[in-house]
Image 1: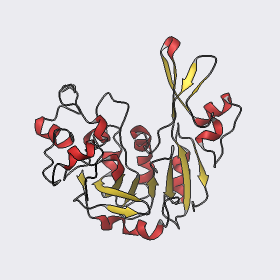
Image 2: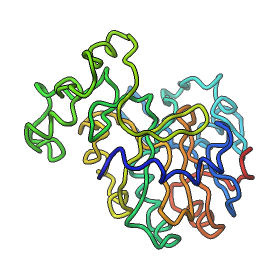
Image 3: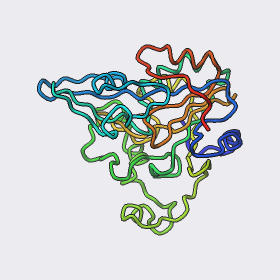
Image 4: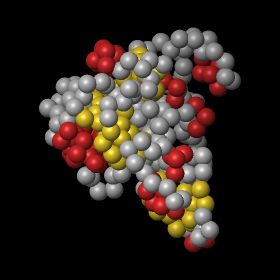
Length: 284
């Protein structure tokens, strides 16, 4: 996929997202909030499961509705452990699971004629490494010395590894060793590549396709710094097609994904197996 594409791709969102709280464009036919699944585990027998918010709520004598937040069904939003040994961690904030996103694709494709031209927006706060690709999390970058080079997603050659590892890339495009200053927490000045602005957030835009997003392994090939075997990594905060018929939004602090689009699309997504969510009013 291509990174740092023309920010004018997102102009329609600038006109229809007036505030950070909005997250998705105004004036769409329908909206849904899809809750990110919860990882459950029991150390006594090394059991692991994927739970819904409703599973957690039942254990805590709570209920889930279209306005529930994670802290409404847990102890102030913290991870939980019960007397039978089962425990849960918090749902992912700011990142939709690749498998969940890929399950959306057939419904998304049915509601766009431009599935070959999809824009993704990644919040600049995750950190960018180079002129062609963002690479995430300076503190957990790919370790080229210890990475399993037999992994199909990493066995892509030394040059590709250098292009996706911010600790190896030559940061000539940042005057005065900006990467080293960033690691020390110092001001690195203005990032020299085009970005896209919304209220209180700035993003890098990339261009991809629904065919790519349909593959759960897409993040490993995206330039987002994912490493096979890790728990996960950065995912886009916004996704939309060129015909602007729908928009997916995952705010960086939110444990859920908001979808805006046709009524039929919202109903189809909420009907998918394993999807927990609700139709909601237009966010304001």
